[in-house]
Image (tube, rainbow over all chains, first blue to last red):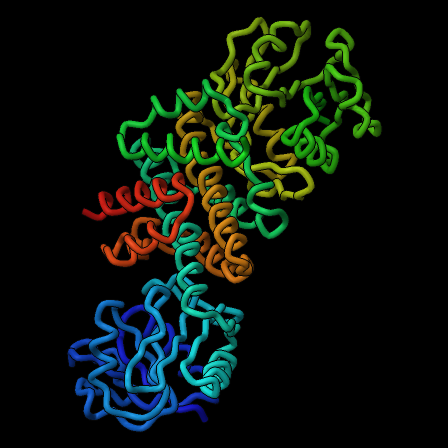
Length: 247
Length: 247
């Protein structure tokens, strides 16, 4: 049994806790949060709001906001691997066995998510700890990738484009439909096919639309149709970026 | 049997021809293209490169570039419904029974696509023709929506955001990975989950990432990481747009 404690109770922590709990190979030792009130949904586990009460575990998984990680890690007095889950932070240089266990996925409350084949970017100060983290990934059916800090930060940046920015474009589509009383549902098959198509051809080959065709009359009409000045600018920039790609 | 002729042999035409051919309720009368050479892949059907040779059909489906539609339609001498398939063009005002049969989907060569539940935006000059077009949609298992020109143009604009622009962001993610020798495959589960999540919550509620969290140090590092000035500008604009959304 691999003994794991989770520090944090937010989205990422909750999804990890659920996955660890479902694995017969993982023993959740404790859940930590500074605030007692944040622990009340986790009372089927042992919980603590005091870092000094943390018990021995193989891995301490830090699932808190990036800018609070360094401070918290330096407050810890324990053995075991201390792994953060951030896409951005470097491998820390703390008195502990520092490591990274970064899930390349988007987590939301109330949305179940399979960990099967979920990519986990692993990095560790001590080579032997890589094996422990790989085992931990395997126990939740995830897929471990050995990725150093620089590579992880590049992947995180790419993830912002293909996830956070993509979702914002979904929001703009939703917003445009809502303002004109049109059903967003009519766009769902298109969204699904767009995401699916790049499993069959590279995104560059999958491009379609007025920007690619240099259909200037449609482009002009679209910019004219948009009321929101930020949407107008986004439309212009994305069109320019597409046209430079296929110059 | 509904008798249909298809004018055009590009992506959209090819997908429609395949779907019509698979339906036992549809008889493909002819395929037309100005250029003989473009017809060679369609020799299992009757083909013609001369508009004057078009035979009687219930529906003539125009699947050619937007800016060539009006001219071609005015050259036609025939009865029957003349339906264009453009998201942008208005319902024409030709001497024919004008109509629209616009598939809200992205079509690519060499990528099979199910027409099941595919949204088809239908509009017709003569009310009775709406029924014919609905029947045509039903025969290929698509889902017909009665949508007027203004609504269709709004949907087309929304589609550019959720499909064409989204695909371009996939391309940027792909490009960033390629330049750093990182496997794009590692991003696939994230792309899939991002597209799937909005079936469970509105895109606005599904947003995650540094822009939403106002994580300025990550945002600055990301902009610094990007080499391409257009990618930098896109990152800034999309971040600003997200932040205004959640102000």
